[in-house]
Length: 232
Image (tube, rainbow, N blue to C red; front, side, top):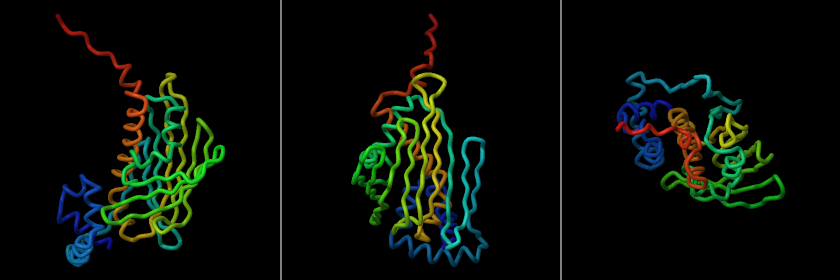
Protein backbone atom coordinates (compact mmCIF):
# COMPACT_ATOMS: atom_id res chain seq x y z
CA UNK A 1 0.00 0.00 0.00
CA UNK A 2 2.85 2.39 0.66
CA UNK A 3 4.14 1.88 -2.86
CA UNK A 4 0.60 2.12 -4.24
CA UNK A 5 -0.08 5.58 -2.84
CA UNK A 6 3.23 6.98 -4.07
CA UNK A 7 2.68 5.45 -7.49
CA UNK A 8 -0.82 6.88 -7.81
CA UNK A 9 0.50 10.33 -6.95
CA UNK A 10 3.11 9.92 -9.64
CA UNK A 11 0.49 8.79 -12.15
CA UNK A 12 -2.06 11.54 -11.41
CA UNK A 13 0.34 14.41 -10.68
CA UNK A 14 -0.50 17.75 -9.10
CA UNK A 15 -4.28 17.31 -9.35
CA UNK A 16 -4.03 14.93 -6.38
CA UNK A 17 -1.44 16.73 -4.29
CA UNK A 18 -3.37 20.01 -4.54
CA UNK A 19 -6.64 18.40 -3.41
CA UNK A 20 -6.46 16.13 -0.34
CA UNK A 21 -10.26 15.77 -0.36
CA UNK A 22 -10.27 14.46 -3.92
CA UNK A 23 -7.38 12.11 -3.24
CA UNK A 24 -8.97 10.68 -0.09
CA UNK A 25 -12.30 10.19 -1.88
CA UNK A 26 -10.55 8.51 -4.80
CA UNK A 27 -8.58 6.17 -2.60
CA UNK A 28 -11.69 5.31 -0.61
CA UNK A 29 -13.62 4.24 -3.70
CA UNK A 30 -13.58 0.64 -4.88
CA UNK A 31 -12.05 1.74 -8.16
CA UNK A 32 -9.37 3.60 -6.28
CA UNK A 33 -8.46 0.46 -4.36
CA UNK A 34 -8.22 -1.48 -7.61
CA UNK A 35 -5.99 1.24 -9.07
CA UNK A 36 -3.86 1.18 -5.93
CA UNK A 37 -3.26 -2.54 -6.21
CA UNK A 38 -2.16 -2.22 -9.83
CA UNK A 39 -0.11 0.95 -9.22
CA UNK A 40 1.64 -0.69 -6.29
CA UNK A 41 3.14 -3.31 -8.57
CA UNK A 42 4.34 -0.61 -10.95
CA UNK A 43 5.68 1.45 -8.05
CA UNK A 44 8.02 -1.35 -7.05
CA UNK A 45 9.20 -1.65 -10.65
CA UNK A 46 9.91 2.11 -10.73
CA UNK A 47 11.74 1.99 -7.40
CA UNK A 48 9.30 4.46 -5.78
CA UNK A 49 9.76 4.66 -2.01
CA UNK A 50 7.23 5.49 0.73
CA UNK A 51 6.82 9.11 1.75
CA UNK A 52 8.49 10.33 4.92
CA UNK A 53 7.89 13.97 5.81
CA UNK A 54 9.32 16.22 8.51
CA UNK A 55 8.62 19.95 8.52
CA UNK A 56 10.03 22.35 11.10
CA UNK A 57 9.99 26.12 10.58
CA UNK A 58 9.99 27.41 14.16
CA UNK A 59 6.21 27.68 14.36
CA UNK A 60 5.00 24.33 13.06
CA UNK A 61 6.33 20.86 13.74
CA UNK A 62 5.24 17.72 11.92
CA UNK A 63 6.51 14.46 13.34
CA UNK A 64 5.80 10.89 12.29
CA UNK A 65 6.59 7.77 14.30
CA UNK A 66 5.72 4.11 14.67
CA UNK A 67 3.92 2.72 17.72
CA UNK A 68 4.80 -0.65 19.23
CA UNK A 69 1.75 -2.29 17.64
CA UNK A 70 2.63 -1.05 14.15
CA UNK A 71 0.30 1.97 13.95
CA UNK A 72 1.78 5.06 12.35
CA UNK A 73 1.58 7.97 14.80
CA UNK A 74 1.37 11.62 13.74
CA UNK A 75 2.03 14.67 15.90
CA UNK A 76 1.62 18.33 15.07
CA UNK A 77 2.26 21.51 17.06
CA UNK A 78 1.39 25.02 15.95
CA UNK A 79 1.51 28.52 17.43
CA UNK A 80 -0.40 31.30 15.69
CA UNK A 81 -1.56 34.85 16.43
CA UNK A 82 -5.25 35.37 15.60
CA UNK A 83 -7.40 38.50 15.58
CA UNK A 84 -9.96 37.26 18.09
CA UNK A 85 -9.98 37.23 21.89
CA UNK A 86 -9.13 34.08 23.90
CA UNK A 87 -12.75 33.98 25.06
CA UNK A 88 -14.04 34.00 21.48
CA UNK A 89 -11.69 31.26 20.33
CA UNK A 90 -12.45 29.15 23.38
CA UNK A 91 -16.18 29.42 22.70
CA UNK A 92 -15.80 28.27 19.09
CA UNK A 93 -13.51 25.33 19.90
CA UNK A 94 -15.58 24.18 22.89
CA UNK A 95 -18.89 24.29 20.96
CA UNK A 96 -18.36 20.75 19.70
CA UNK A 97 -22.02 20.40 18.75
CA UNK A 98 -21.38 22.87 15.90
CA UNK A 99 -18.38 21.05 14.44
CA UNK A 100 -20.60 19.66 11.71
CA UNK A 101 -21.08 23.23 10.47
CA UNK A 102 -17.42 24.02 9.82
CA UNK A 103 -14.91 21.26 10.61
CA UNK A 104 -13.71 19.58 7.38
CA UNK A 105 -15.05 16.03 6.85
CA UNK A 106 -17.20 16.20 10.02
CA UNK A 107 -20.68 15.27 8.80
CA UNK A 108 -22.35 15.07 12.20
CA UNK A 109 -21.52 16.18 15.75
CA UNK A 110 -23.75 15.21 18.66
CA UNK A 111 -23.26 16.48 22.21
CA UNK A 112 -23.92 13.54 24.55
CA UNK A 113 -23.05 15.05 27.90
CA UNK A 114 -21.99 18.38 29.39
CA UNK A 115 -21.37 18.64 33.12
CA UNK A 116 -19.51 21.73 34.25
CA UNK A 117 -16.19 21.80 32.42
CA UNK A 118 -16.48 18.26 31.06
CA UNK A 119 -18.27 17.10 27.93
CA UNK A 120 -18.61 14.06 25.69
CA UNK A 121 -19.55 14.12 22.02
CA UNK A 122 -19.99 11.64 19.20
CA UNK A 123 -18.43 12.77 15.94
CA UNK A 124 -18.99 11.35 12.48
CA UNK A 125 -16.39 11.84 9.79
CA UNK A 126 -17.06 10.92 6.18
CA UNK A 127 -15.04 10.27 3.04
CA UNK A 128 -17.43 9.70 0.14
CA UNK A 129 -19.22 6.39 0.97
CA UNK A 130 -17.17 5.75 4.12
CA UNK A 131 -18.51 7.12 7.43
CA UNK A 132 -16.86 6.51 10.79
CA UNK A 133 -17.96 7.48 14.30
CA UNK A 134 -15.92 8.02 17.44
CA UNK A 135 -16.41 9.34 20.97
CA UNK A 136 -14.53 12.46 22.04
CA UNK A 137 -14.04 13.41 25.69
CA UNK A 138 -13.47 17.13 26.31
CA UNK A 139 -11.96 18.75 29.39
CA UNK A 140 -12.18 22.55 29.58
CA UNK A 141 -10.46 25.28 31.57
CA UNK A 142 -12.35 28.33 30.29
CA UNK A 143 -11.25 30.47 28.67
CA UNK A 144 -7.60 29.42 28.66
CA UNK A 145 -7.36 25.76 27.62
CA UNK A 146 -9.16 22.70 26.32
CA UNK A 147 -8.12 19.07 25.88
CA UNK A 148 -9.83 16.34 23.89
CA UNK A 149 -9.17 12.61 24.02
CA UNK A 150 -10.40 9.64 22.01
CA UNK A 151 -9.48 6.16 23.13
CA UNK A 152 -9.23 3.25 20.75
CA UNK A 153 -12.09 3.18 18.23
CA UNK A 154 -12.81 1.64 14.83
CA UNK A 155 -11.20 4.69 13.16
CA UNK A 156 -8.41 5.77 15.52
CA UNK A 157 -5.82 3.99 17.57
CA UNK A 158 -5.91 7.23 19.58
CA UNK A 159 -6.64 10.93 19.02
CA UNK A 160 -5.56 13.57 21.54
CA UNK A 161 -5.51 17.32 21.11
CA UNK A 162 -4.69 20.31 23.29
CA UNK A 163 -5.69 23.92 22.74
CA UNK A 164 -4.30 26.87 24.69
CA UNK A 165 -5.56 30.44 24.31
CA UNK A 166 -3.26 33.18 25.61
CA UNK A 167 -3.89 36.94 25.40
CA UNK A 168 -2.21 38.56 22.40
CA UNK A 169 -0.50 41.95 22.20
CA UNK A 170 -3.90 43.71 22.04
CA UNK A 171 -7.19 42.95 23.84
CA UNK A 172 -8.81 41.53 20.68
CA UNK A 173 -6.00 39.14 19.73
CA UNK A 174 -5.04 35.68 20.92
CA UNK A 175 -1.92 33.57 20.78
CA UNK A 176 -3.18 30.12 19.83
CA UNK A 177 -1.21 27.03 20.83
CA UNK A 178 -2.43 23.81 19.22
CA UNK A 179 -1.12 20.26 19.53
CA UNK A 180 -2.55 17.03 18.13
CA UNK A 181 -1.33 13.46 18.48
CA UNK A 182 -3.14 10.69 16.63
CA UNK A 183 -2.87 7.39 14.78
CA UNK A 184 -5.33 5.79 12.37
CA UNK A 185 -6.12 2.08 12.59
CA UNK A 186 -6.70 1.67 8.86
CA UNK A 187 -3.60 1.15 6.74
CA UNK A 188 -5.29 3.10 3.92
CA UNK A 189 -5.95 6.15 6.11
CA UNK A 190 -2.44 5.96 7.53
CA UNK A 191 -0.90 6.11 4.07
CA UNK A 192 -3.11 9.03 3.03
CA UNK A 193 -2.21 10.88 6.24
CA UNK A 194 1.51 10.37 5.57
CA UNK A 195 1.18 12.39 2.35
CA UNK A 196 -1.53 14.93 3.11
CA UNK A 197 -1.08 15.52 6.85
CA UNK A 198 0.27 19.06 6.49
CA UNK A 199 -2.47 20.12 4.06
CA UNK A 200 -5.25 18.64 6.22
CA UNK A 201 -4.04 20.44 9.37
CA UNK A 202 -3.85 23.75 7.49
CA UNK A 203 -7.39 23.24 6.20
CA UNK A 204 -8.74 22.53 9.68
CA UNK A 205 -7.10 25.60 11.23
CA UNK A 206 -8.31 27.69 8.30
CA UNK A 207 -11.84 26.43 8.99
CA UNK A 208 -11.50 27.59 12.62
CA UNK A 209 -10.59 31.10 11.48
CA UNK A 210 -13.49 31.13 9.02
CA UNK A 211 -15.88 30.05 11.77
CA UNK A 212 -14.67 32.87 14.02
CA UNK A 213 -15.29 35.32 11.21
CA UNK A 214 -18.80 33.92 10.68
CA UNK A 215 -19.68 34.21 14.38
CA UNK A 216 -17.79 37.36 15.40
CA UNK A 217 -17.08 39.23 12.19
CA UNK A 218 -13.74 40.14 10.58
CA UNK A 219 -10.49 39.59 12.44
CA UNK A 220 -9.29 42.58 14.47
CA UNK A 221 -5.94 42.19 12.71
CA UNK A 222 -7.68 42.94 9.42
CA UNK A 223 -9.62 45.86 10.91
CA UNK A 224 -6.43 47.39 12.30
CA UNK A 225 -4.76 47.65 8.92
CA UNK A 226 -4.74 51.19 7.67
CA UNK A 227 -6.26 51.87 4.29
CA UNK A 228 -3.96 54.08 2.19
CA UNK A 229 -5.39 57.47 1.42
CA UNK A 230 -6.23 58.18 -2.18
CA UNK A 231 -3.85 60.54 -3.92
CA UNK A 232 -5.67 63.64 -5.18
